[in-house]
Image 1 (cartoon, helix red, strand yellow):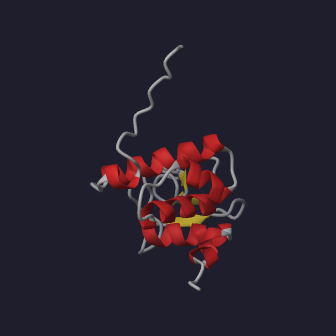
Image 2 (image 1 turned 120 degrees about the vertical axis):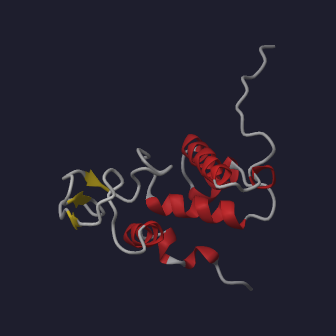
Length: 141
């Protein structure tokens, strides 16, 4: 029997997921997305929030990414990225909905954001996310 890929702490521990995203985005420490300053300090009031010493603006690992202004947890985003990257056939919002046990509209939102990010990076989205990501209105009938 194979090892459970979701046993990694980044999939169920919010602090571990945040550390994983920070290490992936900022291998040499936090960088302000506005002024590109490398001097930042942690604001103790909220986990994962930094203040740039140069421009004095607050930022986190999600600012400037597809995860910005999302209410989904970072653990859920980690699962979505993992599923999109490791799925052999098509990856769907319904599969994400079942895996995360979240609202279908949350899974749909995350699915489209992940597919959009992968498409921007130049991956073939017809194989991973289906052939058509456009949403068409249902015909009245």
